[in-house]
Length: 95
Image 1 (cartoon, rainbow, N blue to C red):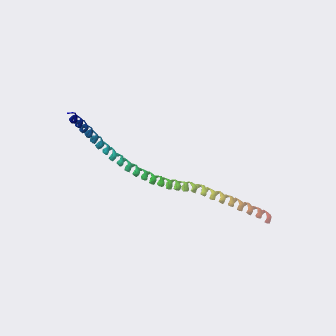
Image 2: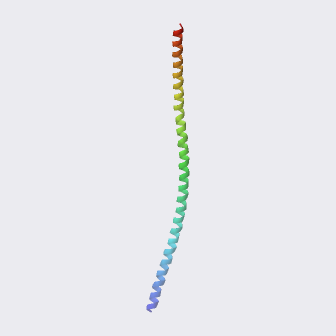
Image 3: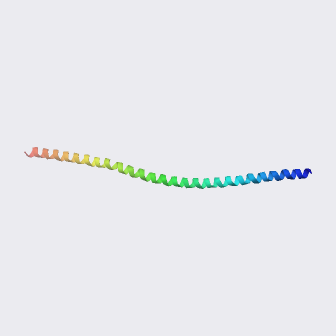
């Protein structure tokens, strides 16, 4: 009779462990799915960062264009003033 009680107790524990293992397998599958999703997100983030870096470089290049144009204009103005001044000096010397 004691053996039957012990066996019944063991069977109950085995059923509990089997139920727990089934639950653990579901959790394990969910963790695996989450890991795959995280890998996908990490790859997408990497590509997004690369894309953003390219756009930042283009923006920097576009921002530099007005500065270059302004430098060209200033250089042209200085050259025009210098040319006018030299022409005036030459005109005064020849007159």
